[in-house]
Image 1 (cartoon, rainbow, N blue to C red):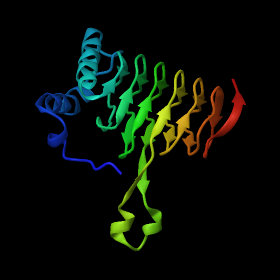
Image 2 (image 1 turned 90 degrees about the vertical axis):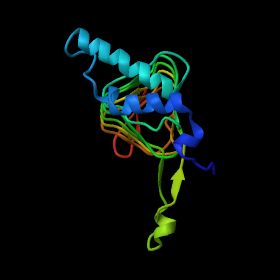
Image 3 (image 1 turned 45 degrees about the horizontal axis):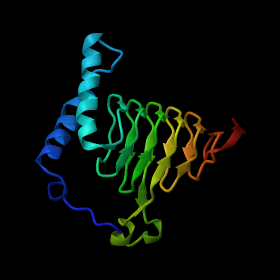
Image 4 (image 1 turned 30 degrees about the vertical axis):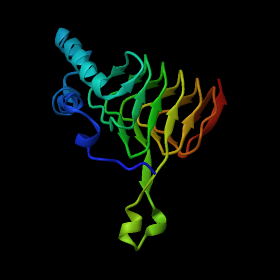
Length: 184
């Protein structure tokens, strides 16, 4: 397992500057659709700071309140990260091009070792699993995607779903846990 080092050991001064700028100031600036030109300027500033700390392959959209670990997030061009998206955990999260993620979505890339109940040190071990969201997916509002899941291209996750297993390409899934509703 890859050992995570302190942020100052891994990244330089420039990275730390944009990290602080994004998380302390730009993350919670007004949305693009509020306050007219002020909203558009704040959205541009948010993207500018986030693009300096997120590994990306082109311009992407990042809404107000998006929280993530920059060491583990990879975003491709034209992806849209919705308002209050939370990407938690030590696993990696890959978001392909043209993915649209709705508001209040959680992507969790690790969890605790439940077999370690009764043994604090073993219980606190993180078990990581990468989350991969492939091209042209739509993730509905309030969905939760758990560790180790791959969502196939051109799939839709219904609002409020909990995705615990891989999703094939070209389907709509929904429910808790998410199941295939129909093929597109």
